[in-house]
Image (tube, rainbow over all chains, first blue to last red):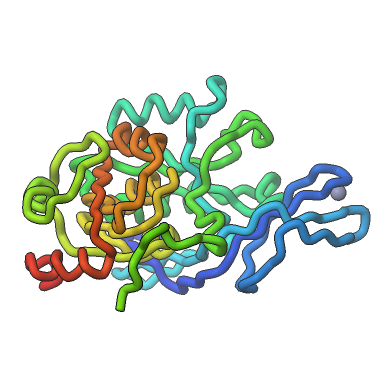
Length: 183
Length: 111
Ligand SMILES: [Zn+2]
Ligand SMILES: [Zn+2]
């Protein structure tokens, strides 16, 4: 194990889209990162026994973390995104943790891997700790802290109403009414 | 400069409940990914995005305040969530470009 007290920064930042697809045959959900800029919502196609339909297309990004002290690079291409827990399921372990940590001014975010792979191969805890360290290194921790936990703690994914920190619907964003042109 | 100074000097309207804090630098973006990748602790974040997700994004990167420009109306659930997390949501009738000019004039651009 490294002795370095890692000081993280983002590297290899790549902007793109997280595509959410649902099979209307078996209800399986799958997600992937794409740099393609215009996937069509509602687009349906068959793949083996699955009939995939594009349910959501969110502008997002991916990145790796690099230590500025020892140059170690940790890849985070398995991170789909961070979800803000809305406390929707009272018995959910995330909700229990959220209450406990919020009392200590520590805000919980839930890290998602890509589905369905992440259900059997979740993002390992040491990487979630790195993410936690990274975001805390970026902030004034005397005011509050961040704690990243795994989505595997969510009681029932299909019932979770958490909010992804993704740009959903950005492609149809209309300028506010009455806004003057800049120049 | 603090969030309190800015409210007085530029006439920003506070929408959420929050504790005032020091402001360092300005970050302008309407994309959450951009903010998560690039905003720094203490930055003012200028945007026309008003949906609820701006709150966890602002919280994650520890911006000092989110300023909604162009007088865009902010939904109540966004304001309530911001109050819960002690995130300053300020509103300005100025377009982003004009507001940036004023902030620059106050010395927030010089580092
Ligand atoms: Zn290191
Ligand atoms: Zn299927």
